Each structure stands twice: as structure tokens, then as C-alpha cells.
Image 1: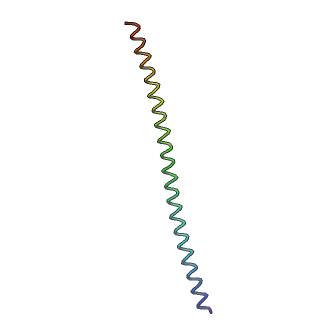
Image 2 (image 1 turned 90 degrees about the vertical axis):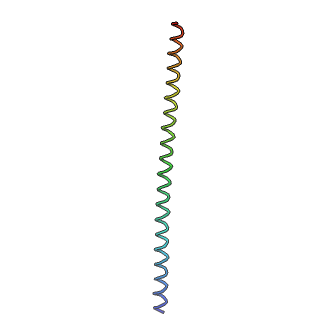
Image 3 (image 1 turned 120 degrees about the horizontal axis):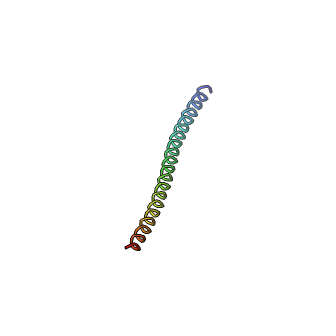
Length: 72
């Protein structure tokens, strides 16, 4: 009886340790994906800002060229 209980406890401990290792691996993978998502979000925001700056610069150049045409 005691041998069977000891074997049962040993198997349960192995299963528990395997489940904990698997959970840790999934947690690492999740954290990596969250970090990657955050990087992509910040990259998107940076590109949006650059696009807005480019549009503003084009508008300023156009108005400057229009003023130069009017003077000529």
C-alpha cells in the first residue's frame, strides 16, 4: 500500500513539475508577444507622426512657392 502511494505521489509531482514548466514557457512566450505588440504600436505611432510632419512640410513649401510665384 505504501509503495503504491509513494509511486502515486512521485507521478503527481512529475506531472505538477511538467505543468509548471509548461506554464512558465507559455508565460515567457506571452510576454515576448506582448513586448512585440507594444513595439509595433510605438512604431506605428512614430510613422504617423512622421507622415503628419511630412504633410505639414509639403504645405509650407507649397505656400512658399506660391508666394515666390506671386512676386515674379
